Image 1: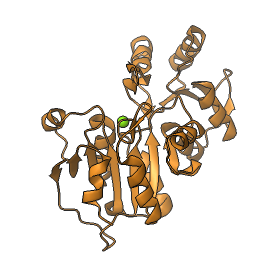
Image 2 (image 1 turned 180 degrees about the horizontal axis):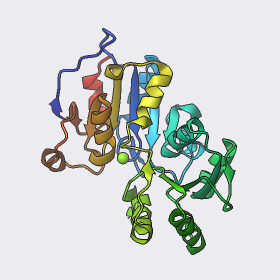
Image 3 (image 1 turned 90 degrees about the vertical axis):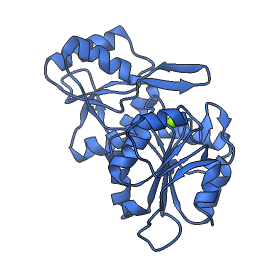
Image 4 (image 1 turned 90 degrees about the horizontal axis):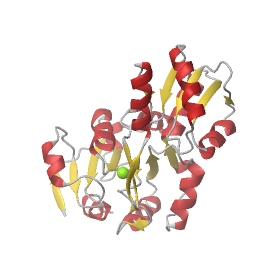
Length: 270
Ligand SMILES: [Mg+2]
């Protein structure tokens, strides 16, 4: 069901956008359960030659982990269609010529940083990089604390407070950010959603106008905040954590509100 739909004005004179950004959990699937219509809609875009980008703020997994998960669930996807908050952070750090990092992250997180030629070190790093570290230890907390007190640059991949899983929500990086704020009074630079760089970097890369881009997601304070700030077409799906009452209470004005990705066949007919 479609609750609300603005008149869409695309700049390409066509009926269809050129690129779709999708949040994954709560939008395409819930944990390990596919949301009805998601594989079919994504296939339709692929067959129509429309670009698709799978976005995730969750930096406890890397893009290869997501690739394997999406394949297993039946999506036809390539690794470079997947973009996590860590990938956005890597672009930023390369652009700013950062090399030496003290990471707080999972083995997958560290693997992707090494593959991108960063030096991971606890000796005089340029940056303390906080990820969704499910392997966080007191030793890492203590070292990060000393670097932060010593004035090292501080970057976090994303701001989410909780992460949805099949067994309910679990504490995400936002809780670690609060812990370090408590002991150092510092807050990090945040890269992932709702920072618009998560999508503007990609739009610039493909030279696509923001009016030809769609962001589909289930979370108000990350997905929809970013879509509205980046001025792309915003689609809120109610298949994840947001209820229609939450949207009505929020101060966000999105372009389309619908039950799930399945409704997009009606909004964007081929
Ligand atoms: Mg989500």
